[in-house]
Image (cartoon, rainbow, N blue to C red; front, side):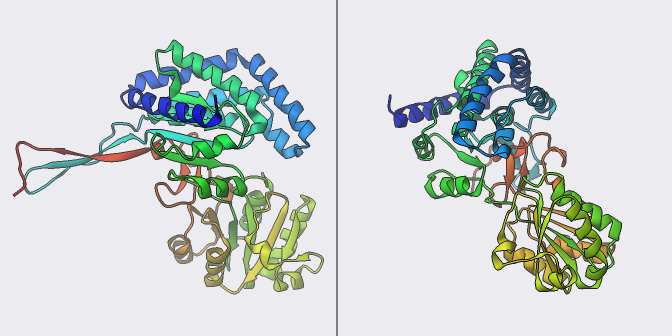
Length: 418
């Protein structure tokens, strides 16, 4: 069968399954999630054997060590996937939740009810664990989902798909509620993005190139973030030990993730005291610094930053540093060069902290804390489907509730409009 026909049939089957998913009880959804977790653990050896096929191909393709690391399904990966599903099963089911009711002058009672989005398509790269995380979250929110993982993870994702299908079948749920695209061809993505009659939302997860391709070709609404150009601003009077710890953690703990700091902004009043010690600590961790002229005057051994550096998401141990005269300049820099992802301020001044929170337009704004906390688990959402820097329909880390929408429910006792 042609790829277009396969994808079209998958989308139609998902739409049919979504009808049953919408009326699925919380108890049944949790039963399925726990069954998948159980089967992942029981079938770990086969899943890892399939994963090894992907790793062999990845080596032959010359993928980077970081990419191969993300692709590898270790024992800890199996445990993490199963644990994540059990955590999602324990979360409150958002479907059916009602907002506070308002009574209109004519006696109508107006509320909103949370309902599933319907069918979600998720397009992502490398990490096979995303297959399980995304399936679990979408399922908990009452949605059907079509998953298209990276071509480099095809064997791993197909093994996980078979585990999910077995669990759905054994619990009496429609197997087409969770489907994994079974081919590597990029043509499959193009056809998936054209299924606007069957799919309600597309969520891409991966590099900027993938996300821009999806946005440019999709006929379906897309929730996205292109990149994470995250900033830490060290304010005048900031506690130097706190500023050092937050800046170091934001950059060094995991430099290859989207919530890692890419630019450090430092108030001119503290730059001469703060930057030399901070630069020494960064150098010991292997961080390459690129600075503005004022930074380079303080740290003459570092590279000069170019205009392009301020826009750059390095996902590496490279950091841009800029000295700014005040908070106005720091916020202006973030507004011009940032990606609406994550911004942090280190300050002891309550009024300036409030102002930073109010005027900084990013999905997560932190006061005296590392940018690394922009994560669904760290913010109490449990697992997350991704981080959205779009403001429609969600902004920031997306948990189960963000995979639902609302409809109005109006209760009357015979009212007619005059």
